[in-house]
Image 1 (cartoon, rainbow, N blue to C red):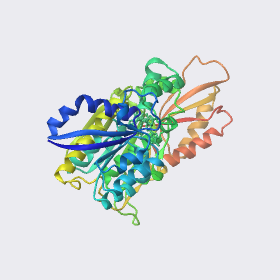
Image 2 (image 1 turned 180 degrees about the horizontal axis):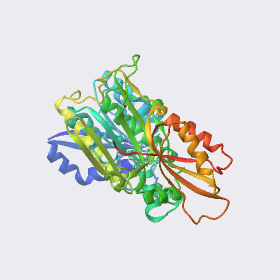
Image 3 (image 1 turned 60 degrees about the horizontal axis):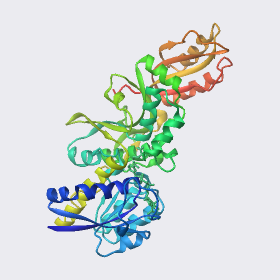
Length: 441
Ligand code: NDP
Ligand code: HSE
């Protein structure tokens, strides 16, 4: 049986998971593929760092260049993370004509096009299934399984850490900081975890999915992002009473309305923000570290992908799948059969968030006095923003009470402007909380 030699850089959460599962399932994979996968070297930063799974010392080096430049090593796996040194590692390997597998969504988001070009120039390929939604094969699904579809809607719960935090806050009333510490212990969170909780990791992943689905590389600067730091237990409780669950969503939607003359190609919304989603929607029951991606194609209709979105084992599963593809491409000389990204629609536009129309949940802290609601309603009315419902729970003591409004469809810019006016009313005692409501229309 032919054998492919693998060199890995990074032996932490994901890297040690790959080593472990290759040791256990490598023979099974070889029998399925007809090609053997041999892990030849693993570069780490320091030999004695604690790792979720042991890596045989004989395989280890602290010099990544030794791995990349070893002429016997045919495939490089980058599991270091970050956009600095990791980029050098990937580019060096691609220039040497070696296929690279990476789970590094931050790197792809920042330098994807450059890396794809480097792969092409090196006559090789770049594989990145593990970069989005952990163990869920969503890259393959969008790029290959749904190649005959145009995509109208894609909604993703794509950050395991945030979903873990939001689920435990809702289910157990747990504190944000405690649950985040747990997510870090489990190996779900990025370093630093701000990448997760401020929405940037989800932004990287949503950008990759949007680019694949719509065929132009989405500039990450055009993606609107909001994290989950401001989500409080109080808002979770109000959302629950109203029949909703709060989730951090990556949204890729074809924009409605006419395309301006100056623009070509698709107009799409690409954004990441926490949203109230109806409890009856299937995404509302995706809990813990699980991810889910809902994809609507014009041929296939609605589809849903569900699985663990982070962690050493689920992510290793995606890396193993890329290893299989890379090995088969190598032995069959077919590295260009499925290119990493083809910009099939060279021009496309990401619609600014101000133009995006959505529904809203708004919580105000107001003085409980006659005429307050009238003042707020007047500002919204003047902006042509409709109120769907108002709730002011009884029994709140003290100078101010929460006032919760559900707002009909309105453009984000119009809503923000009206909220800024409301915030300036003397009867409003704290900055308003606004969370978008996703109705999946
Ligand atoms: P870890 O921090 O657990 O592991 C990073 C690894 O890189 C460590 O083994 C570290 O060595 C090694 N490393 C750091 N600097 C160097 C260097 N200069 N030379 C050689 N090795 C180096 O990260 P994760 O495993 O969690 O993440 C790896 C990648 O996978 C990231 O891009 C991440 O975004 C992505 N990812 C992570 C997921 C997860 O659930 N954790 C899920 C999906 C993707 P040492 O062990 O000695 O410190
Ligand atoms: N930090 C990421 C998450 C890892 O929590 O989803 C998986 O990409």
